[in-house]
Length: 78
Image (cartoon, rainbow, N blue to C red):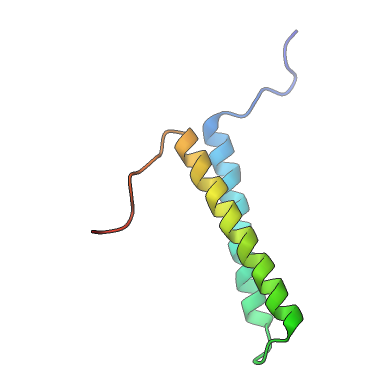
C-alpha cells in the first residue's frame, strides 16, 4: 500500500524547524516592542516562556540541520 502522505525529507524538516524558530524570534521581538518600561512579574514570566521557546526551536533547528547534513564544527572563533 502506498502512503498518501510521504514522510518529509530532511530538508523539509529543516525548513519547518527554521520557520518555527523564526516565529519564536518574532514573538520575542513583538513582546519587546510592547513590554512596559517597568515590567511586572507577569511580563517577566512571559519573557521567560518566550525565551525558552526560542531556545528550544533553535535547538530543534540545529538538530534538523545536522540531520540534513549541514552540521558544522563550531561558529565560535578561537
